[in-house]
Length: 430
Ligand code: HAM
Image (cartoon, rainbow, N blue to C red):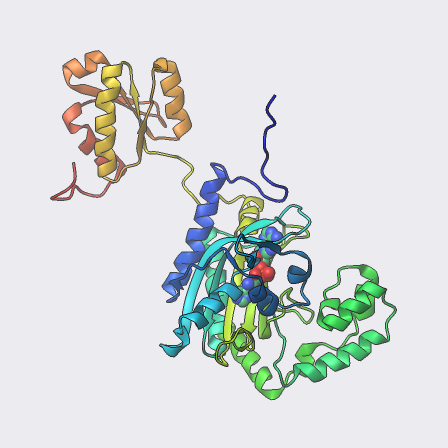
């Protein structure tokens, strides 16, 4: 027997009807971004490995353990993108977008790849909707992005989540804070691996989920108490703006993000029903990233929203933010000639912007009616040879079971009226 294949570990196929939820999530989030002046950008799915090493940060789990890196036939080291920001910044720099009007506001969507231990909500390929506002350090942009994501989530019907907010300070106030934290951590009873983590990035230890570590760091100094005046004011503006937009948030003194480039504002959207992988999106400001990648000294702020987890969140809240019927009208032909005639009528219905399909192949009345039921259509359009002779079709309302006989040359108009389809155009339409 020939061996069958399965999707690689940590990946999954998106099949109907779940695929409709995927599209609805992307649509809801990107509609809100477009309304706030963000424009679409697409960058390659693979980039030079060094871009992520420098951009995401050598000390992060993502770079140390999770990248899909390969050498191409030309001997280049390339990596499937683990996240979107580094590639978008590379494009912003390469195409001198910061020489134009500021801020540059961009959104993107697509798959990202991380070699993580798969579990519910954590995959080796995941999709994000991301956005970046680059070139200005205006805290109103930080608030705008948080509000846009929040509005997108609400449009989907989500409500059981919290917005967690913090500030990581800047090049002025973070180094002395980091020193204070390092000496605090040096006095704790930590295992060797955690000590090494503390050496590379002491902030990450604050994010440790193990109770024995959690208990020890409970009294650790926190960045929010050590912000310099300018960072404190920056953070205050973000909070005032969110208050004025009516976006609820919680200040999280221990909020730590997994990527190295953040400064000042950081935030995360955490859903209450997703268990361990509950972050449905996160982001923040990055002051040094663009210069680190060879660009000008410019600041940016952005987010990445995890589409896979947002889908799980919609399911956990019992939401179906998409049409679950495939079509409005389904043609049931009782002979080959009737199906041919129906194919023509269905084509006219589609031209009039109605959603229509028909039963293909010779499946008999029962099989064809089952197809109509499965399609979720409101109307079945039933046609037999005798109907064609008489110039009529039977329109069956599948919801209340009533049936009406309508002249074939009037049936498109009849269904358009019933379904509230847009009026016929003067040219081009059927
Ligand atoms: P991130 O927090 O690494 O940030 O990822 C953003 C979101 O992607 C997470 O909150 C989560 O919903 C989703 N996600 C991440 N990894 C996985 C995974 N393995 N499986 C399923 N979902 C996942 C970034 O990637 C930054 N680029 C965000 C950003 C943009 N910051 C500034 N600009």
